[in-house]
Length: 219
Image (cartoon, rainbow, N blue to C red):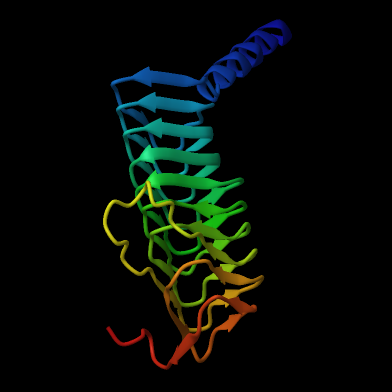
């Protein structure tokens, strides 16, 4: 009976190890989908999107010409794409950076990013979320929603003339009610900056803030 118990325990351990193996997945011209509560390693694809279901885990997640969508209560090391949007679900945690070139970044309620949020031509929006490494963009709008927290400040770079053939639009930056932005808010180009009267921000360089009351500034 003792030997049988040992055998059963060994089979269980081997099965469990296989069930939770964190294999890398790489594709060309195809999407990647990790189901709810599954664990994966590095995920990368070209010409395809990546989706992580609720409760899933992955390491580095990257794609070219595709979006990245992670559900609620997901953990990942980093997220990056070239042409596509990135959405981080409620209470999800990304240890390092979230980056896209041509696409928006959205963090939903309770999402926590340990690194920076970076785009070139994409909007960045936080909804009761946290970014630990600051926000950087060139041409995107920024919305730090109510009760959100950004460490490391905000930087909007001056556009390179080769990136914009026409006159670039003016980015709009909104710091919502009870939001906190620590560090410098630096603007190397013209922006529209709106800051709630209940928000707390660091030094502002290169812009003049317009204070507003209520949930959002006037259109």
